[in-house]
Image 1 (cartoon, rainbow, N blue to C red):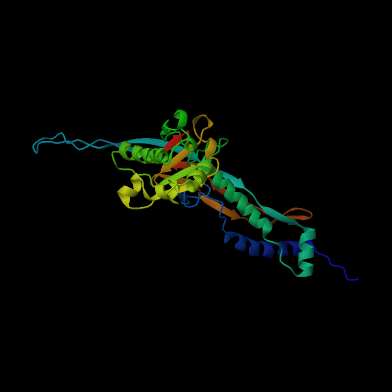
Image 2: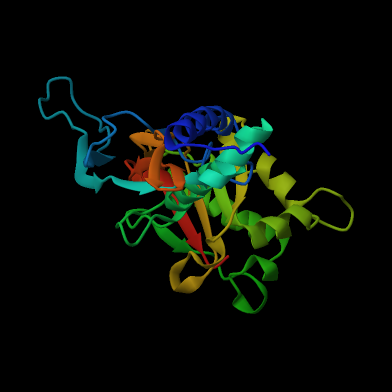
Length: 314
């Protein structure tokens, strides 16, 4: 009977070759349930191992006034600038095999499954997704949905029994809430800023996505809102509306929160100086070979809080 023996050097060589193949496959994978990509600009510039990132939030004040050509007291615009130092932290997740798995795979001439690598990569994306939207209290990070510098207002109490919740409101009252948020940012910034993206709790998103405007039409509140709102009136572009997990209790007092903002890195960005990557295979024990993965990330920096707004109680 032929015996198969795998020594440490052979095992390491095989582990490295398998990790290279798996990692290349994993980096190409897409994760449709991960929502931060496309909704939060990601900044990967800067040194990978930087400890903190300094940014400034700006707000311009001042307005033009009538004046005489001979006058010398020209009105000036001023920038109110607040400096913030945001820390950057490292998170890690990886995968590995034991010597039995490696020996069996090599003996049978099969590739090790990429499922472990994919699961590790997926876990890293879920962590980034959570930080992007809700921050992290342990690290002192804030996300796109809970920045303290962003103005939060209550939804209008126009529903049945003076309710603010959309479940108790007519289509017209729901539309009024959305337009009030867009108009609030527009007028609050002297008509400079305009919301182009709105995030909703899944419950409210499903409600307006399935509820018809009236009994005489198949058009839903959602499809109508995307094309008929203050932003679209001004720009001719449809309003981007997306459902996000966790907004059902993100508002003041644990109420449902709607988030509106201009989706641009000038307004906000997620700092990720070191995107997720796998590191070299290493032997962690007499029978174990691991592939560590890590990324370095900060919270979401909001440079122009006036270009965002929250509405609670929907």
